[in-house]
Length: 126
Image 1: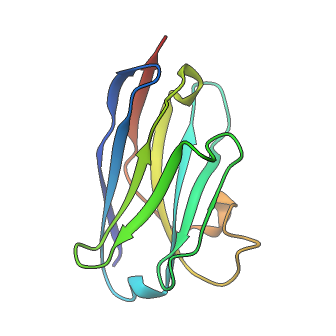
Image 2: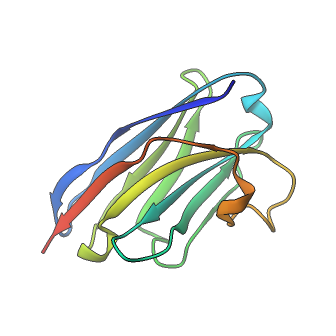
């Protein structure tokens, strides 16, 4: 059984920073692709970033590129999302997700992911 437990998030002013963490438990996580998605009120869930656990390859949505950094800590079995230069439009519930890695072509699609965290609210005030 794979479990994802998120922490971090909260309220910050525009231009500030926040860090989200996702603790991964279960077997074979080294074969995973890990991702962050977000969902704002009234909008569909959207891709933010992914990282392939083995090798560390990453990719980002254009809207966060240069501001957000996804990383993994193999010693702690965590995936982190460092969010800098936050904007009000980054306000959303952020979800950690995991799937067995098969292709980068599908890694940005929410339907690829079998396992999801509980979601954490990030609110950026203007």
